[in-house]
Amino acid sequence: MRWMRFSPGRRMMADVSSASLRMPRAIITVRLHLPQALAARAACAAPRPPWPVIFAKAFGMLARERPVLRRMYASLPWPGLVELNSAAACILVEREHGGETLVSSARIRDPGGEALAAIAHRLASAKTAPPAEDPALRRLLRFARLPWFLRRPLLRLAIMTALPLHRYCGSFVVSALGGQGALILDSTSVMPVFLSFGPIGADGGVEAVIAFDHRVMDGAEAVRTLRGMEAMIEGPLASELAGGLA
Image (cartoon, rainbow, N blue to C red; front, side, top):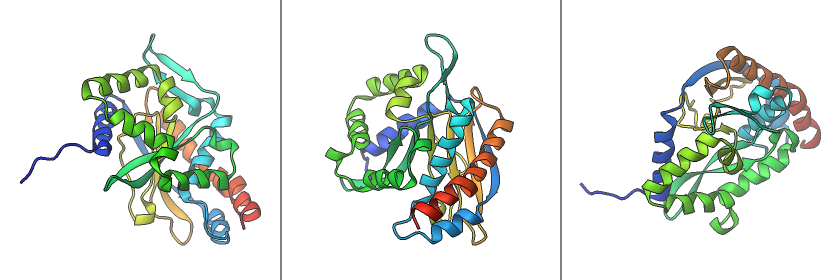
């Protein structure tokens, strides 16, 4: 048996996990059907846009129409909601650093207004770019080096005021293990919306999960959000895959 110090990646995950316990979170699962998008993506030349990119853009497009998807809870200077100009995506990625695997992210300021290919390129860079060229990883490592009695209050302040969290991380998270045959049913996110999905079947069927801050929206709105994303993916995004990327 041996005692091990927290690595930077484990340290940040511990901080976020602790902070997420304060959020009144609800979780809803809905089965979506995406046969047109599945076929259009299969016809694309490699490298195809990853599914997390497609889900992130669908949510971003929907958020342009529905202000509730652009809101974050803030408790300072007094409890209320902050409505943003756009929903910023935080797409989680797994990458190697210092001999360990850690979770970093790609922040997309307004995924609803970007091409799928552009978002996919930024996601690929977040997975492979050297730390010096990856702002999100640099910030993560710099923050993780602070002592815990500074890290946790600073993280808590960012959550309580909302805007620093949006600026450096995002307003919604996309994380999925569907490619590995798994479905994430719960999250440790501190953002108002966490999106995930499982393996996509040959018929385009997929279980989608939305975990949301109950202070920001209710369950019926969460269901409408997943159904709205289904319509976006099967409509405009399937067309974009078939037209601009095939």
